[in-house]
Amino acid sequence: MTSTRRGSGTASRTIADLLALAVDAYAQRPALMQKRAGSWLELSYAQVGEIVSELGRGLIGLGLAPGDRLCILAGTRPEWTFADFAASSAGLVVVPIYATNSPQECAWVIGDSQARAIVCEDEQQLAKVKAVRSQLPDLEHLIAIEPGAGAVTLEELRERGRRRDPAELAHRSAAVGPEDPFTLIYTSGTTGPPKGCVLSHGNYRAILDMCIQARSFDDRDPELTYLYLPLAHAFALLVVLLSFDLGGTIAYFGGDTAQIISELREVRPTYLPSVPRVLEKIYTLVGSGMPAEQLQRAVEVGRRVRDLQAAGEPVPAQLQAGFELVDERLFANVRAIFGGRLRQAVTGAAPIAPAILEFFWAAGVPVLEGYGMTETSTAATYSSPEQHRFGSVGRALPGVEIRIAPDGEVLLRGPNIFGGYWRNERASAEALRDGWLHTGDLGRLDEDGYLYITGRKKEIIITSGGKNLTPANLENDMRQSRWVSQAVMYGDRRPYPVMLITLDLEEVVPWARERGIADTSPEALAAHPDVRALIQSELDRANARYARVEQVKRFFILERELSQAQGELTPTLKVRREVVYERHAPRFAALYE
Image 1 (cartoon, rainbow, N blue to C red):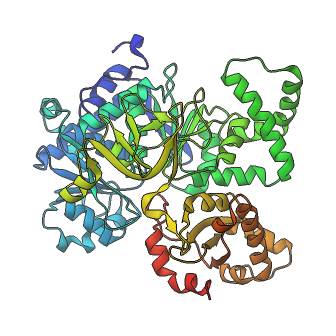
Image 2 (image 1 turned 180 degrees about the vertical axis):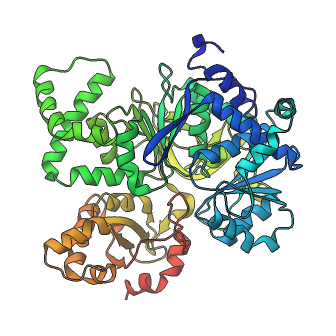
Image 3 (image 1 turned 60 degrees about the horizontal axis):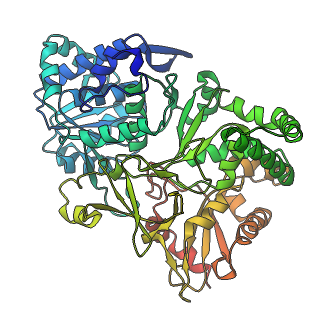
């Protein structure tokens, strides 16, 4: 591929041959960056290609056959991507596992997928697998990224691969067809055990083509993407594939979420895939030092200017003068947090308040929403700086059809839609009907084709008075508060809704100390009358936006954060509502006494 095809991708036939074509096209460009001993080191496409080729041949040397499943149990790091490309090149099917999963959760994915091999990050992850090994008769090979983990290391696998003919791997890659399974991704599941989504090479090649046609990545200069999202999630996987397809660079975070903001300043990315919580924290960090009315006026000025700029229209001199003042005092600092070069951030996986999106837009950091599921090979809709509407998740990607069912459910159709769940015909038949994916989400389309998600079918609360409530709306409003980290509404078949609240201790503890509250332990703060009054004021603010029958009447403050370890959150930090309801049933019930 020559430079005249920049922005068109590798035009690979499958994901199995994508990396080899990327190496041919972008050989000396930096493919990735990783932090080692305080410095950011680069690897070129040629270097990544060599590593992946050796690993792919090493996997063949283990006796793994085309179609065999290989699990990856590791955090977000370059070696995850190396193993993923190597397995795909060898015709294997990659099965990601979240690094936060418990041993029994790992056992479910490994066992249900009938995986023959697994790549583990280190001794800690390997110990999870060993603890359940007796339950996994199909698992033959344990591979470790870190040395000293008591398994074959990636380096040893590379050494084995060097002794095999590269033509063997090329033959395997060429034999893979678009209809063959590429990855088997288990949905994190807010209810029930995870289901394995079978996604083909054709599904992911289609979604890559859609994103390129929609110009999700800049097609003028290669993007530099900062990646902290778990690679076990479809969102991160798509971002990596798209970056390699277009010759971009991925900067893998150093592994410590507390260092994300400092690393953003170091890397200075142009593209940032994110989840709402990180953006909410930055919004709170910047906005908390300014009175609410003053912040609102600044956002109004900034938004007017950015809207005119996006439309290519001139900015009136008086408006420009006011904008330059707030830009210098506020918005420039916001851009600096992201490194000063961010062209676009994309958020997904959970709702985010439109007010936060408007703030970042005004600051010159477009944070745009998309929508999709694992079942859609990650995405189905997109937004762009030129075409977006706050509160909407955007319009259909090229080739995707959207329909709203009579009951309000969002239905999707397109070449990116999965073929069904692994070994689960019943669930497949429920999800795929007459060629349409039934998403389980409720939504509406406006006259211009913008999709608005209004709730989940299974999460609608119907009060004893017959009122239908969408909990996500008021929950989202409460999470805008700097003092609140999570909010979960409850009230099905009850006279009115109530709510569980968790505190953002990074904000509440300094607030409490300023007021002379001596005991700032989570337990003491949750029970303190001043803290309860603070949260009540935030709830009053959120309630004011809703009709009286929709308002939350009472709440309790949980003495800790909701936890993945206790099953209350998925690995992508979605609330497992039924688990929360069951675990805290007595406290919810007490609010009605």
